[in-house]
Length: 466
Picture: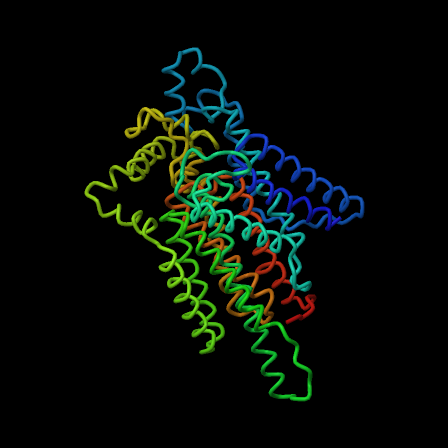
């Protein structure tokens, strides 16, 4: 059963990313069906065996329940109490509409679609946590994710260096001078890479620790045969890390580049606090210098020009994000409790829109504000506060975990989650199906490694494996 579920998850993750980020209806619908069927099979088999044991925390279910309330038909008096602007909008449409039972969501159909998408993310979270086992010293999902990252990075680098801007026969019409892989949009491509880059670094750190352990054993017992490979694998993962970083730089996504560098520095500092080896510090310095030197040799002029544009007078106003955020805040103030309904931002934002008025702005370019506008401040807190708490628990777990492989997996999850949480301040990667599914998958693996497995260790039921 676990092998079948692993295949399904790998298929969904890779298929969504390759299908232009999963933004097409057929792509994310197929992924949702596969995930729901996989979860159903796991529940069905566990129920038949008499033991239902799924790694499902309470907070996602609370968020589902909270957002689902917006679909329930409510009497006019209750609608007026819970969401005065929703009731006012109904009275402006017609007095008859305001006198009927109605839902708090301004467009229930879009809320239903959004809830299905969140349920798919919750499914992959549960399945990824159920599958992960640090005792095996391998995770097929992370291996597949690494292979997908190599493919995407290779495609992006070719696109940037050669100008060949085709994706599976489709000729790109935008971002013609950037690396985008199969995502088309450079920012979403960078969002994918920034979630994978920390895992390459974490595996390099794991192999470095294995190499150090081998050296210590060899010094203590010279007669023992040396097991080759750890040092070479460390170099291999650092090379992979360099390739992924270059692909991210070639995306020319300013937010993606800065976030990737920030998350990488953060995990570097964590590893330095953990190991305190001068050799590791020297290796990191050489790595950074090597990447910079290679980038300068290839030519980073087009990339730097994107950052230089930020110095132009009035750039912030012309760029538009700050104005969209200000307008979104006004929307949040009018719908503070339940929001306008999950997935309804584009429709709800139109009356508040003061920039790009001839365009349909379907996202706030800030996932936190968008979720707050759609589900209320309480809904945003139910979604993001537990993720922040889980992130802190991962950091604590990494610093005191005695098991090297699990520590490396936790480190990769830390960098991946941090990158997405920071990037969500200026973009909407969590509303791109492929990236949202990968983020949920990483959360599930991190939850299992840093919470459930550590809990088993404290109870004495976990088998100690370095």
